[in-house]
Image (cartoon, rainbow, N blue to C red; front, side):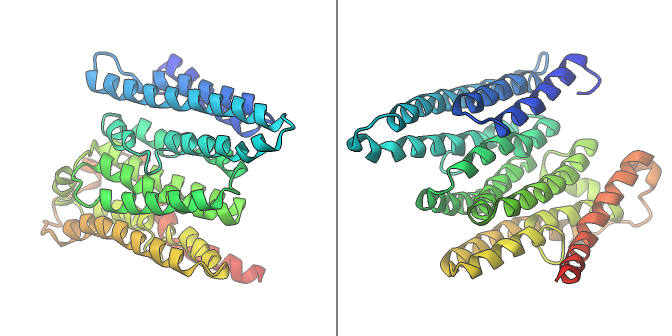
Length: 346
């Protein structure tokens, strides 16, 4: 991406458009930032003489353009209603906010508006998948935090996202689809965090983005797209197993890895608010996602392999080795560092 000057320009435009949306003080500039974000991401998705990438680009464009038009329509209705003096229109004010909320969920790929998300993920490169799972969710999440007072609707989206994200990944052999359903599940957790504290969901989002980066960096370097490719790679190296599977189990939220820390904070918040049923449901769905992560991990760990077959020269360049080792260290040790910091503060 960074060797191509035009794509580099669109990449920076993608970043700035999200910042425009986040820092906007009017609904119109929010919509404008989302539109620029869409138009900046489309050129990054395309690849010359590749029909699969073109199909994913077209699907993404149609869904996002439809969502943007509905958002603009909802904003116009909302502004018209909020400026009227008739009480009968004030009752319908929330319907426009419900519509904005649903279109933001469509933009993020949250359930039940998730049908486009795994298909688009399947037909894109790992770099674009990383952007779609992390940065592209930031702007809709921030706008959603402005209308988080629609709690009943949010709880419905939380339950559906965690449920579909957990069950959808069970029978997947494609790693891109598996990561897509994992992302849908994590959206439910992030919306839950948003209901209690804005800082809490930002912590969750940052750690989720870091863990996604560490996994996708590995997949992209070794060109792994399906489970059978991963098993054949792992047959030759125990160090590769340890590096990748530490990040995978951390993303699943298995204690004592780093990914457990934000989930632990959300569980404590739900206990404090006495939302025990929702807490139990989220933990159960998280255990299902952990099951299909463990399915990958246990199969890879239990396969026989010759310990003398691997070498650093065959699998690693120096930079790749240093980066993956650092990310593995943070996934393992950061949880203990954060716990110690909390105890020192208190």
